[in-house]
Image (cartoon, rainbow, N blue to C red; front, side):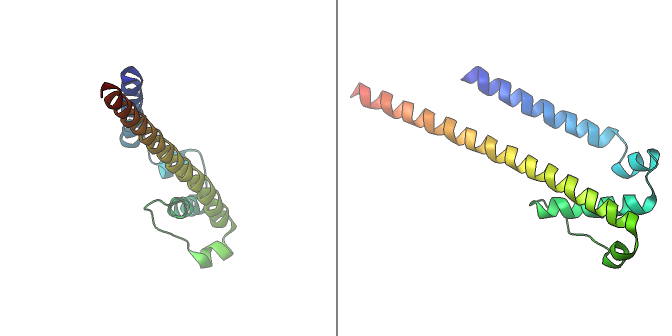
Length: 124
């Protein structure tokens, strides 16, 4: 069990390190989308939709939507819809992984407590 926990901890540290490297060392989503040739209206909508999608899935981002622009600018609306869907799904997936990990730790702790109690009762 100790080896499994150490491997699990190592994987978590590696994933967080990789995420920090990606966030700090790479271009922003806006820069990447501009380099790929996405129109500015689409990018604006994507960023607003992405923030709103993360918030809708329980993240700390705020809901952002320029409703008049959404209703009159198809590229902004398409970007907003795409950003909302993608970022909501990503945020939800991250939260579900976190909940699963918490459940796993709780089960491990409960197993440890049960085994310790069984050992204590056998000694009596």
